[in-house]
Image (cartoon, rainbow over all chains, first blue to last red; front, side, top):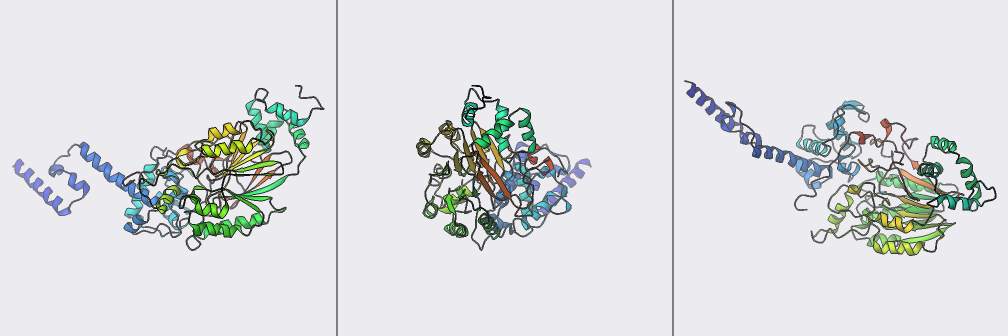
Length: 157
Length: 381
């Protein structure tokens, strides 16, 4: 009885996985993941890191005004030739470790994404991007990555 | 020598004071020299008074009143794009020129400190030359890296002449050096187009162009010859695009062979290095050589995460919402006492220097740790 139930559950899991389709995390999960958790393998961890660093790389390109990447992601970060990196070399003075906070320029309590969009619109004279878009996440990834090791000090003006 | 002798020539006192063995305590020397620099708070003056230097400073000031003071203007880092791409940078360059034109009495000359163009485009250089045509005073030029690497300086030199140069003016020797034109070749092996070469050089935090700022052996030898006949106690001013010391090499906020340059000017008692490139207020002293950092007209840069000279009084954190904030030009004076004094003309607000951490441009460095970028180091670079 127990064995059949386990087989049914396992079979159901496989069907669910097939229905949802491939994706980095789902491909990595072994078929019996719903029955018990499998330990992380070094390969898996390396793949997670790879996904992250790829986003950092894309964010780096966007941050430095790479036209091809902007076109691919369908964003216009500046209409006057400006790039984020021009005022923020190494993503300095972006202080992602101090958000969310009251942001003077926006006159609102803001997250990092709010500030990124404000910067795109005002100093960069570009077009605001969707807060949940891939481009925003990539920019965020690069900004955080470049500032890793900084002291978390949320709310500092 | 008894320095209280009333009939001693004050100039002799100064030479005596500046001799290595007889030099006052390091802290006093800084206090005295930087008191004269307008960049320092009134508090330092009180400090100078309390250690008894006041009578000597006043005496020197009066005694040196042999040549009248004169003013000159510094303008740099306009980073012009073609007019149809970016109008803000043009606006700001035009404003600076108008304000320099309005100086009364007029400045004796203008020094343009480099980075006129953003991408070294002849259109951008011509635009800059056009904007500067309004100024009819004498103009001298040194290039920045943004002016040079599209065509390796061809358009720049044709328009503004070659570097290095030197001229004497009312008892000061002014020297213009090129610290941007001598980078080791990073483009041929990778078969870069001129635009790609310029693009990498134009990225301050890029990792492809490498440590490009340097004076170079040939120019150092020229410098040595150029100052060999200049009296050792007369003022010497070195104009460079990059700072003549090591501030932050990852952003090329330095000059590779700065130590050798310091060696060459070591015999001189009164040397001032005035530089651009860093787009921020900076002040440093190494031995007798003072380095004063000038503002850009285009945009202000954050202070580097490390290396800000201890003597620098930080400028305010600029407001990114106001494109006139944290930028401007400078009025410099050679005073009657042979000192080079600097006055920042910063737009956007009345306070140039920060009084508290909340306003300071260095405030982020309490928490911030940064990493070099990666995307330009990966394939195909």
